[in-house]
Length: 494
Image 1 (cartoon, rainbow, N blue to C red):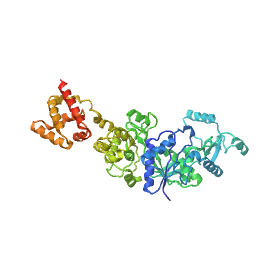
Image 2: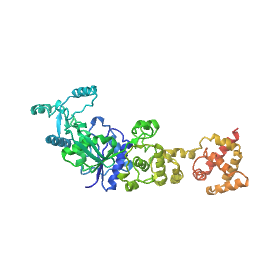
Image 3: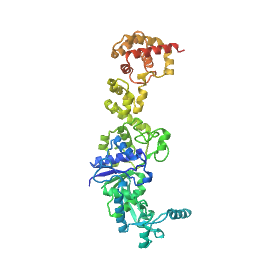
Image 4: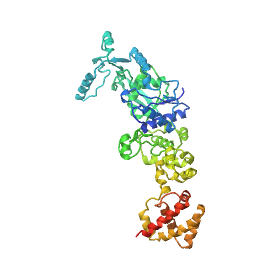
């Protein structure tokens, strides 16, 4: 059987990085087995549908390099790929289950069910609509045929008929065998009163009809696994492989990573921005390669100390055996470090064509763009750091007071006057360093102090890229103006 893996998000808002990781592992498993990666939009809950979500999901996957082989945007042989367009398919399959006696119509009013829930709570019990009490309610198991026909003219739902006293066993590739007594299950609603299927029913039917061979999803769906097994059994269908991924945990404390954690700690939780307030990893200056690499490490490793992977390397290295059971704690500093490694590996020619880099380089000599990125990229954790790293191009930063105080005591103004003369007489930047060193040695000036004075004059602080590489990007007139300005500063400093 050909490997077919689906990613099936709901368009209820932006795609959380937990969802992207599920898509990534699904994509990698498909690639590993020379299979097909399918995107299916699970939009049966129309009340929670958010405009723009579906387009966001597609764009996010494309940015990450996880372009689906089949889906609502590129089609395929198993469509439609939006559940809202498969309503007739679900209706026909509901009828099959009803005919087999594996599902039934239920006509209970919401008020009546709420009353039963309150009674159960008073008695310290959990309300379940199932084998133990289904004959006490208004449904097609308790009403006459003529009453059922009349009731079908009004609102109703369709429930799964779960047989009591059965042990339901399902194997998960990560967690092993999972077994549950059917007495603990409700007769879950399969079809809602609006004629749309519930997640449980549509999920199973679609996975079967789309010939999905492996279902990969988050561990929050583990409680649904026995119900899905019952539905598969009701149809007489074989179940696919199942893999339930560990949660991505908060950086601190307990629980699943949420948008609130990102807002509180100042890091993104979405791949792309969503609205004005939710900045994504892309807008935070991450390369898709760095973002994907870090996500892969949240709950997986290849059994070695290796941490830096390209997407192609992940395709070669990914194995189910490397997925851990326990939750993986999110670490934004580690994410930035991973991104830093990819920035260093990325060609400057590619980097200068990224929109945010293009924007920052606007107004600078295009012939120097690649050389400038070559100079700076190893200093960047994210592309957003480029702004600070390039500030010296337009003007010096405010002089570092602590440094200038020390340099003042070492005759910084006189040293800079000497540097000014040498720069003024030098026509080749490549020769400047040697000329300055010779001059410092002849005048018994500490070379380190001299270099610090020169850097303060050009940049305003001691950090930054190679001093003489900086000189290549500043024309001679600008260098002379900055040195003169620094001389005046030191002379006025008391």
